[in-house]
Amino acid sequence: MIVKTYRAPTMPEAIKKIKEDLGEEAVILSYKKVKQGSFFSFFKKEVYEVTAAIDDKPPQPDKKFKNVVEKYTGNKISTNKTSNETEKLEERIKKLEQLILSAGKESIERLVSDIKNDINDLKTAINYVKKTEEIDISKIPLGMNKYFTYMCDIGIKKKYAYKIAIGLYRNINKSKLNDEEYVKEYLSVVISQFFKQSKPTKKNIVLLGPTGVGKTTTLAKLAAIYKLKQDKKVGIITTDTYRIGAVDQLLNYAKIMDIPAIVSITKEDFKNALGELKDMDVVLVDTVGRSPQDIKRLNEIFGIFKGENRLHLSLVMAINTKEEDCLNIYKRFSVLPIDDLIFTKVDETKTPGSMLNLVVKLKKPVSYVSFGQDVPDDIMEAQPLKISSLIVKGEVKNG
Ligand SMILES: Nc1nc2c(ncn2[C@@H]2O[C@H](COP(=O)(O)OP(=O)(O)OP(=O)(O)O)[C@@H](O)[C@H]2O)c(=O)[nH]1
Ligand SMILES: [Mg+2]
Image (cartoon, rainbow, N blue to C red; front, side):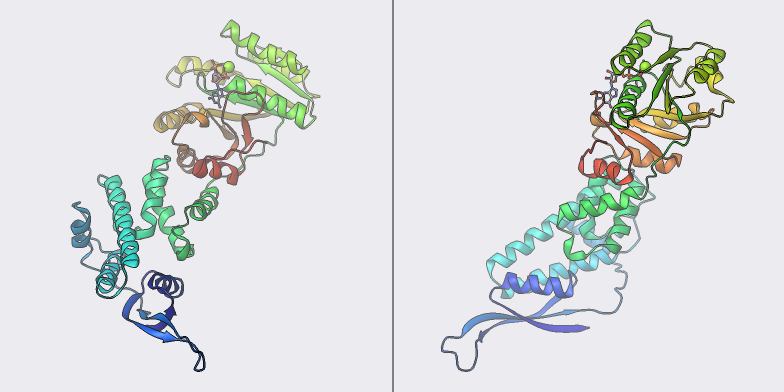
């Protein structure tokens, strides 16, 4: 056990010093008011002298966890597992008892409010995982519960949020746990590790995907970026001749940007179009949207591109689509060798965390993220930290 004595003008300041020095786990052993000042000084100030201690042995699992959580949250939890976190809760309750006997009103109120917050965070977290067996909520450190539920709220799968919360707690400076901005910054960095940015190595980029996900709009944005911002020679091919309006929509974009555009219907047409545009730096290929359930029509699209190895295939998925539907879309389209993912409509969802779930599940890199209808502004390259900032803090950075 480490025992130390601290002096401060007020009790809250003494507690702050103890927290910074010994951490959240420290307990207050004794407390008294003493006079402070040099031997010769006329006026001596009264200060608080607080003795605190911390156990330097590794904490033992606490068998009382279940009872304590049930007592303080009113929730029955169905786990026999134990947790060090209960010790912390109990220690803080002990501290509260000591302070009630000795300290001023202000410090008691602060401690009570801290404990209430922790209990509320814990209650919410317990409610989140009640039905989930693979998560042992008791293992989430007290200060991390609110970040765990925050991650769940923004759409990150509970089992990933749980692992991230535990991993983050191990590495983060504990005195910063209440600094939400700092923790979210830290979270962004951790979450960015799950993403990989795709850099197409082939110049013919095909945008595939179900109906209405934003393939044509994304293509127009990319054409503008490549041509206007990167000064590249850009060509467009559309194989979407299904709707009359679709061809017009794309030819219009091409005309505005002064980009050559070719309409192709058959595999043969498509090959010829690639030949015609062989001098371009980038060729963007639009495709017709098809329902992932419409196998026959999907096969028509696949037929055009199958066996053609000059293509970079991007699967466009609107992130406001249910996650299991996205997984099904991927399953259907992965008849073709999909190179990367493009996420769209991120602005239309409150759960952008599903991007994380999808890349973990599909193990695919991401090339672009689209977050609005404006051509060409509402798109960004999928740099991992940019995506994670968007997920965690809702920040978007174009380019
Ligand atoms: N909010 C939002 N709307 C988008 C985004 N991308 C595209 N849209 C809109 O979604 C609608 C469909 O976009 P399209 O580009 O025509 O979609 P598509 O995948 O080409 O559709 P089909 O060719 O019919 O399969 C349009 O109203 C677009 O403006 C985005 O990132 N956010
Ligand atoms: Mg389209």
